[in-house]
Image (cartoon, rainbow, N blue to C red; front, side, top):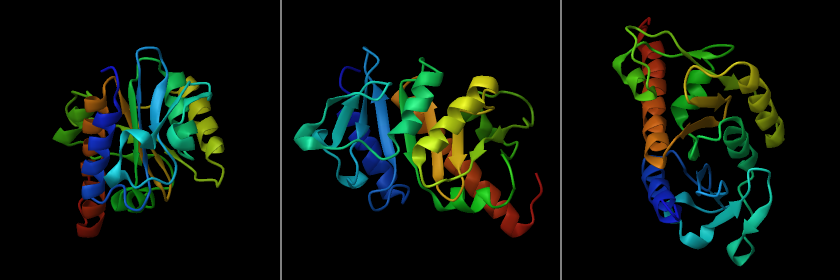
Length: 204
């Protein structure tokens, strides 16, 4: 993929239609062969993305292209943290879902995921796998969250390719945009399942 902006715009429309990127919330990025990445600009509705709504940056934070003076997403540092931690990752997607906010309140720390078939979507092929989604606190300064992600993943790689920010949303990544997209869907399903299980008294 030489220029991922059209594909990212399509992802934004899909997530917006599901209620995962309402208002101007959430952000999407994908890397280029030279290691730089395009990320959604700040304050742009994700259901109406065009090519001029993306900013090209280096992993170190240098802005290389900013059409019409666009500013990168306020949560760009989260994407930088993932790309710096694992150079093999080619896309990073951050969405806000209702179930993510509710599910994080079901447990004080990391979130145990239901050991169901859908966990295979993360590339985990064990019978009744016991894995957790990392959960980070939500200080006002997003770079503090990014630093916490960098520090933790450097010493303890996550069980699954997604993390949650408490009272905020989820961030998933992958070695392709399609893989990252699928992992967002898998995560949304599992979190919906957790919330519904808590409501109905299901124990995993």
